[in-house]
Structure formats: C-alpha cells, structure tokens
Image 1 (cartoon, helix red, strand yellow):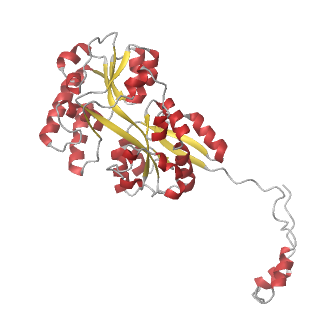
Image 2: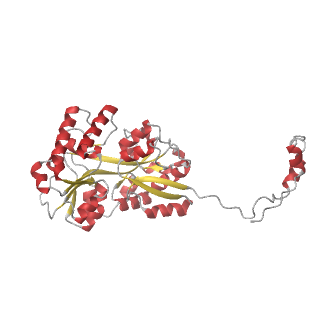
Length: 373
C-alpha cells in the first residue's frame, strides 16, 4: 500500500504545539486548522467491529432462530456455549476459563454467584419488559427484587419411563427408589450426573428436604444411592433424553422440558412429576460483572422478555416461560405431551438452595463416593 505524504502542519497546530497561543484568544486559528480534511485518514474507513455477546447456557435452551432475529434487529451477534451442571459453570467462571457475557444459572447458583461478586447489577431502565414477568418470580429467595438476574424459564426434575417395558411406573420418589421396582431394571436406568439433583432425589424419597444439612439424613440418602447404583447404566446430564428415546434405558431421571423430543418420537415414553415432593428449578439470565457489553446484554434480555418471543422460545425448549403474558397466550399447543411436561406439582415442592461450606463438603464427599472419583 502506498503511504500517504506527511501532512503540512497548519498554523494552529504549529502554534498550539509550541504552546504560544491560546484557543480562547485566537479561535480563528482553530478554524484555519479545521478547514481541510486530514489526508492521513483513509477515504473509506473500516466500519466498527460488530458487538459479539457470548451466551453460556444449558444445551438447546434458546431457539437459534430468535438469535438470528435479534442480530438482524440490533446488529448484535450472539455466540452460544453450553454447560451441563451449575457446578461446572461456576467452576469455569471461578477458574477464569470462561469468556462469557451472559449466563443462565439456576436459582441456587445465582445466590452463589452473587456472594462471589461475579454478577453485574441490572439497570431496570434498559429492561422495560420486566413488567411481563410473572409476579411470583419477583420475590425469589436467591435475588429479591431481581437486582442481578431475570427469571427465564422453569421446570421440574422428575423421571420418564418407557411404558412398553414399565407398565406400572411409580408416582413418587419413594416408589422410584423401591428395590422391588428398580432391581428388575438393572442396566436400564440413568440418573442425572448432578450431585444436588441426584442426592436431592434420594433425600426426597426418604421424606427429607433436598437442602438438608443433617448428617444422619444425608447418610441415609447415601446408603440409598449406593444400593441403587448397580442398576444404573449411566450418570448422564447430557443425553438422558436420547438414551430413553433409543431404548438403551427404560427409566431416566431428568429435567421436564428435555424429554420433549423423546415423547414426541415415542408415545410410549411418559414423564412423571413425583407427587410426594419435587424439585422445581428456575433458570435465570444474568450478566457477568466483567463483561464490557452490559447494555447490549440487557437489550438481549429485554428482547427475550417480549411475550411473543418468550412464547416461541418455550415452544422450542419445552420448558415453562416466566413471562406471564406468554403463558396466557398458550405457550404451547394443548395436548398430552404438554400436559405431561408442564404439569404442576401435585404435592409439595422446593427449590435447591446454596449450602454452607461444611454441608457442601458432605454433599461433595457423597458424590465422589458414588461416582468412584
């Protein structure tokens, strides 16, 4: 490329460079210096680099068509990365292994991230569509008044079964962990590869809280899981839905909306919301404090909170939206699949909560023993 000739120095720049004249006294000299274009500037300057937001979220948990629409509307591109447990996501953030702007932590994980000062405080002025959020989600224990996160979607953790092989499935966690039920299914069961969810299910089957800190109750849950383990084909938080769909397992512990494709593919597959107790998870959108694109991230959150967008997103993911007006618009067509996946808990339910250090260490030890790690 041919280099531009060095520009001739203007009177203004000469005098100003030598600090001999003042702009206030000699404004006309500034005009002399500004009257011509700077020949060092290219004729066709390059456009600014487009903003790229990195979204770290559960797999298949946002409709890619909506990301394209957002980019077409705003010029802001979204790239997507996935994780399979909240613990994996938190570890990646703490270790500096994750270059993300937006994340999608579950309820208790939000509480942990706030305590670690990793989340940016949201600007309500950029989130006009917050008025569309169901009021039930405004006073959540993990972020009262939604200062750091916006509720995105919610679902239950239950289990799916193949009715061709399991004609009489249990309706409760107690029945799920009954040896008379599970022992004949040896090698045909998958459990979530998630310490809080799997230990939580065992605790619920015993009538205890999924958030217990009681050592005796946790010891009973560990014994129950160790007895159950020989029948488990896989601990899987990634492809449990595919396993039950392809028939490699007949009973799968998992998240409600993730079973959507399997139920559509095989009517014999049914989803159960345990009636004795069930874990309800609320996933949220949050912005990392270190992100340089907070305002752009808020634009995306506000986009997702539009009723029509929220409805379409729920149709894609199979989970419940937290946007109340989208629920009123019938987030999904009525039918038996939606009745299964969107069933409200009939008995009691609870949300996972963060644990103090000593209790978390006990859960970690139980999980390491169970997984042989």
